[in-house]
Structures are given as structure tokens and as C-alpha cells.
Image (tube, rainbow, N blue to C red; front, side, top):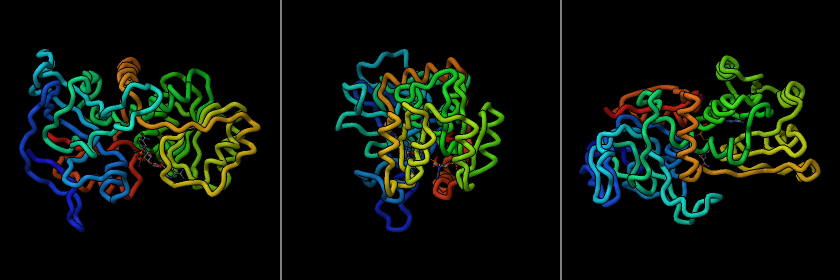
Length: 333
Ligand SMILES: NC(=O)c1ccc[n+]([C@@H]2O[C@H](COP(=O)([O-])OP(=O)(O)OC[C@H]3O[C@@H](n4cnc5c(N)ncnc54)[C@H](OP(=O)(O)O)[C@@H]3O)[C@@H](O)[C@H]2O)c1
């Protein structure tokens, strides 16, 4: 089968290779992938900026397809089912935090940038019927990460004042769509006015360009402060969020694209009883809840572009360049 593999090659780390189609072990299913989607993590693995990198691994954490074969002990009614894949491996027993054995498909286990993948049978979920293949493939990793950040940690609900930072991000767009669905008062930031305009059309109260000087004051003035801020950029901006949070507000972050802050406004943090909450992916129950939520509210992921698998490397280059709004999707069929 055709697959996109991380190799030792000094210049071109990503190579299309033909390798044998995997065979499902006991308890597993073989999924014929119809579409897969990129995450920031894939490009970081390409750049060597990810822990525990194993060469000769098929990349890709997001995928959707059809169950083509089953291993021993798997219920036969899964055969032929249209599914999306929960990318979690070994979350573990504690719903609050992942186990030491936790990983995500696409590193170090083989991922979705291939014609086929084998996964444990309990990791496939019925594809939401209102989504096409590209939309379904765009959902798993970003949807799960956003779901935990927005609901488990953020406790976002109707009427809450919420700021989604860097809304153009693959995960942030889901946080935005989820918060809008439950009728929170959602404000956004982006470095791109077009993305802000899209969000205003989708129900955002206001949007601010984080590249514009003084946006923080304007955001505070027009919102009156935020109950919850959802961020993945990190960096010094965290102190702006601490200032913009309402007393007892929460800042939930699931990434730190811009690195660490040089300092942290601890005085305001403790005085205003603000919570800084880290979050990562989500447990398997949250994945099931996320899929139910997406079905209930008929959420449609924002897709930046869809291209054939043969052009996958250009999608990595685009991820590196930045500027996309929504997910970069590959069609495998
Ligand atoms: N913990 C987890 O489980 C988990 C899961 C997924 C991702 N992540 C991490 O979360 C981060 C985002 O991932 P992603 O896949 O959503 O990446 P992505 O699609 O590349 O999105 C990155 C976004 O960051 C925004 N950004 C850049 N500079 C910013 C700034 N100064 N202030 C606010 N926003 C800024 C941009 O938003 P605009 O385009 O709107 O300007 C950009 O679109 C990465 O660090 C990733 O590793 C963590």
C-alpha cells in the first residue's frame, strides 16, 4: 500500500513508500482510509521537534474510512462500516490524566497517511452522517483536544464570555464552533482579518487582530472580561489573558506555539483567583462525547483545503508556512 513515511533521509524526511498492507491482529480492525488530515504535530515531527521520534513510521493522526477486515474476536457487524478513528493509544484508567504509556497514532505507532491502517476495534466510531469524508477526517484530534479544553476544563456554557485565541488554528476552530453551539458569547483573536470576518459571520461577538497594538484594551472594553480564555500560542501573551480574565476566570491552554513567557503575572493570578489550566487531547469517553456533540449540533469542521494524497508534502509545507484557516485534508481514494 502507498504510505507517507518519516525516513532518515537528511533532506527529504517525508517519502512515499509502498509497504505491505497491514493485517488486523486479534481485537483490531483494518480500515481502508478515504481521507486523512494534518495537524501541527505532523510538521513538528518532520522538523524533528517532537519527543520520541521513531523513523520509518507512517505519520498522520486523523483519518476516516471503511472497515475492510476484522481480527479475531471483533464483532462482524463492524465490517463495511464508515468510521472515524479515535487517535488515542493507551490513555489509561484515570479520566483526568493520560497514562505514562499514552501516545497518539502517527508516532510512534503507524498513522493515517496511508491507504490502510489497523487500530483497536474500540477506536473506531460511526462517521457522523452529516459530514463528508474530508470533514470526517478533519474531526478527530482537533475535535477531541478542543472538546476537553472547552467543556471538561473550560466548563463553557450558554452566556459565558469566552475568548478563543488564534482562531485560525486547526484545534481553535473547533473550540470556536463548540462554544458557539452552546450559545456562549464568543470573542476571537487572529492574525488575519479574513478569519475574524468568517467568525463574525458564524456568530462571534467581536474579533481582534493580535498583531494590532492595543487590541487587548479593546477586547477588555468590549467584552467586560472573559470567564474563559482558550489558547495554544502561549508566550508573553499569557499575561494579557490574565489581565483580561474576570475574577475567578480560567485560562485553558493546550499548546505553546510561541514558547514560554519571560515572566508570569503571579500577583494578578492569585489575587483574582484565576486558574491556569493545561489540557492535552482527551480521554476515550470524551472522544465518544465529542462525536455525540458533533452529531447533535451538526458541527461541520472548517476545512482550509482538500488535495490528493500524492500532494501531501505540499500540505506539510503549507502547515509550516501558516496562514491556513481550518484543516488541511488529504483524499486517499
Ligand atoms: N495538547 C494537545 O493535545 C494538542 C493537540 C493539538 C495541538 N496542540 C498544540 O496546539 C498548538 C496549535 O495546534 P494546531 O494544530 O491548532 O495548529 P495550527 O493549525 O498550526 O494553528 C496555529 C495557530 O496559532 C495561532 N497563533 C499564532 N500566533 C499567535 C499569537 N501570537 N496569538 C494567538 N494565536 C496565535 C494562529 O492563529 P491565526 O491563524 O488565527 O492567526 C495559527 O493558526 C500547537 O502548539 C500544537 O502542538 C496540542
